[in-house]
Image 1 (cartoon, helix red, strand yellow):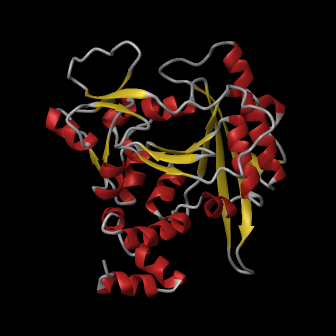
Image 2 (tube, rainbow, N blue to C red):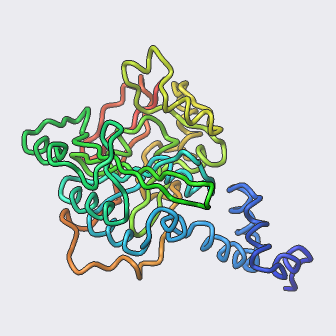
Image 3 (cartoon, one colour):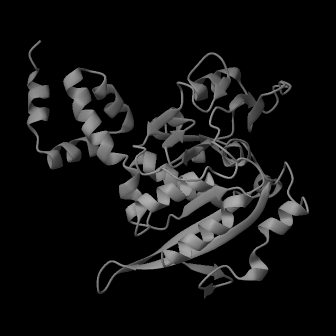
Length: 324
């Protein structure tokens, strides 16, 4: 079958012009275009490799992005928060930081690696070449069992690095190493405030749990509300509203849940067809030693429930509650 005029024009674009063309489209249009024909799908494949290349994103943060991917793999670390959101959304927040979530065993190695990348440890507006001994509380809190199912947080270590863009312009990169007493992906699913930030990046892939509502509808459904947030609008909500997202707290009908999950059933899993997964080339993630907690688990099941549904948690499956 001969190419259409549009296909012929698009395939004649230079690589730079093709990237500019796709960059002007929203996610929904890009996906629709990729399904139109094999010719357009090949153009999409070229764009996707460029637009969602983790090495390019990491290169503006670290001198050796391949080594950083190996570090993520070796320590079972997960990147989430605004960095993961920007990655999927092809956007850039000048004040955005990088949040690295991991368990106890990999925390010291990640902190040491950051200091070797010219990051300095920050505590109470003072900088240090490394994490000072009295601040290394994650081991102590884990041994003394000071975390809980309500708050599995063990420690947060802040790092920063000043990058000179030119003689007159510079930026400061901020990295948070967040140590939790549970699997980081479980923490993202069941402890994050809303669906807009339920995206994560590992050494091997990037996953968005609610891509349709987040990147097409630009909606975020509140899933965990602290007591203070009931009275005052929380800072995180103000931040993401400024970034163009609308929050919904009206998830009190089954139809709302159906719209959120894009399916009739409200049973979900991290790697189901309603998630958006981007698999990375794996040649840069090989490590001689296995991660301390074994191979990273991704196949978590969960239910999307409305707050007052009175549905009891089933054995072997955890539940994500949406505020009403």
